[in-house]
Amino acid sequence: MSSIYKTILKSINKGNKLLAVLIDPDKFDVSSVAGFMNKVNSSIATHIFVGGSIENADVYSRRGSVIVRSGIVGQGQARVLAGRNVVAGFIQDATVGAKWNVHAGCYIINSAVSAGRSITVTATSGLIRGGTTFAEKRIEVNVAGSEDNIATELKVGYTAPQHISRIKYQLRQDQRHTRMELAYVQKRIAFLRLLKDRMGRLPQDKGTQLAELEEQENFLLGQRRDHEVKELDVNNRTGTRDEVKFEAETIRIHDIIHPNVSVSIGEKTYNVDKERRDLIFFRVGDELVFGPLSEDIAKGV
Image (cartoon, rainbow, N blue to C red; front, top):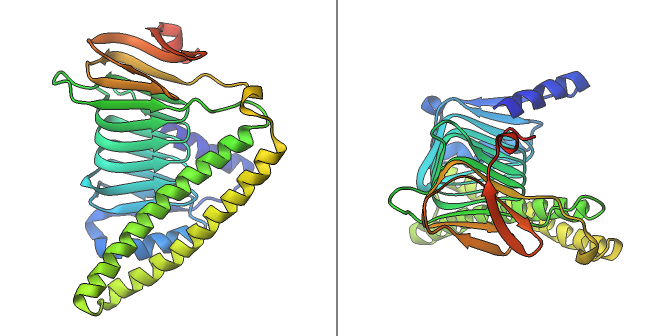
């Protein structure tokens, strides 16, 4: 949450305008989420605050952050996508994606979570258990896996360059975000079209949702084509992969990592076979290695 606060202060100091949208789950009609999100994303809104939990619902902010006071939960049906950050007390049985960072206060359980920068769960009992957690730069958590050896995947990228090919890095983030949003929209469209075939005619609110989603799909398909054109242009203007100098990507365990946790950095994977404590995983050339998480590293020095 501190990063959100710092971003707001920075924008105020620069004189930039911000618009936050507050959602009260107790007074919100879930059936109107799709239309409401389209209106929010066509506005200048920079933040979406949810004053409770997101349960079995889809919330996305194309340009801003999503901040959830309690948590995100939904038996695989809750989805949250953000153009900046996602902050929540916990994430369980949900799909979450952010172009910048994801921060869960207490835990991430049985979820698919991805971030263009970092994912942190560093409360005293901060836990990642089950599911797949992917960040381009860093994953930081107190406890990974469980005593029951539940399969858990922790992954970070290995393609974040420092100089001109940062253009490629940003393009990859944009492409990934567009793919995630397009997949969600197309899934909703397929469901509504199937419902229409079975019913013969959709209720008015569902018909409106379908029209809005089809409009959004066309926009995203156009965005995907733009990314393809830009990728060709960037490939023609930048150097080869061998010329790129890479930054360090890490997975940091502040307490315990249990057996049956899979740790990946780029294409290299290490399967944890016994309980270990206070570790940092990183790449040295083609090798994935790990060592003790020293106090200085843990503090970000």
